Length: 440
Image (cartoon, rainbow, N blue to C red; front, side, top):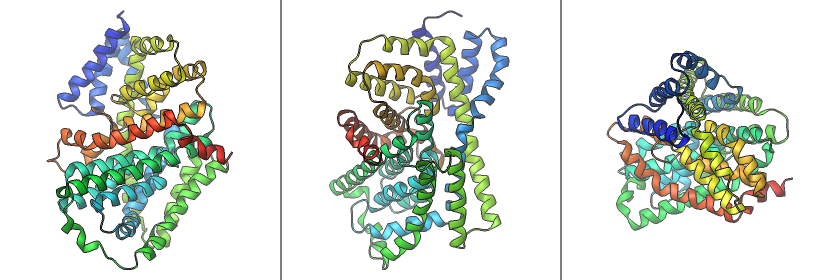
């Protein structure tokens, strides 16, 4: 069927929104709209017969291997209890601050980001560990969930980030430079999250009852626990990132090395046995199955958008404009934030890079600046309502009485902080480029 691109865009995205508000699961909403789109724009039954193959092709990509392995690495540390030890070691270091447990969530999640490199794994694991603890102590659900979702996204910026590796590879840029460029923005976000939590809980003490933290405020030997339970795990970070930066291993191989390093660390702590390893493998399979369902649905949805002409028409309209460097960067951010509300980050990269790279060249945008802006915008889109991926990960680990609207409200303040950091990078690129330039 021949249809104007803007009509096709309204039809497809409108159908997804309608199904989501009707209560359909994310993956199944995409699947349903994919069937509709293929039937309408790809010659009916002939198009439908090709859909299963498209689903398979969308998930059988070698570039997804690091994601699966980083999730396995995180699950090994979670199921053996090593992750809990690290979190408990960080806990007593943070004393007598308003919103202490939410701050512990941010600090622990930042450390865990450097171990897993997976936003989904980071959010899911921190949600399982810290959300019940905060809710049981009377913390505000929105503060508890917001801090966990926000720090979950930092895993996309702090090495090892599988998405950063993939983005640099697709754009033929430097993997090393992009990994280093994400360090300062990621840490800056974590610091600002903590500042927000402290200020908000100081202004409104009911968000984090003081009595709930008193029993753990003065635990002895805090630094000893930090050096025995946290510092050794940071060596895993060194193995993964170091092997990539010094070109000892490919991203896939470095992810495998990370799993080996995590296994060795857990054996040294005498926490790993066959039963625990099998449980870690099962949980990894569950999380990866969820991810693959979402990727299959949204990646095929991206193809339907392309077939209908909606994506091409939208991005061609943008590329025709004569834009300044700043205007082009802002436009790229707006497009990514809009697309991020409806599809996964890998699909967004594959869809937009062919348009953004020529646009950046014509607008004199440095390639590294373009990639780090894209990476931060992709990270922010994880929290963008209505369909940011981490919003649904949080829904999966939260108690049944927590509704999606509450999760949206929890994400909004932290979303504002992330947009502030993105603005800093746009107007002051040295925030991101200083480390890559220093370690050239």
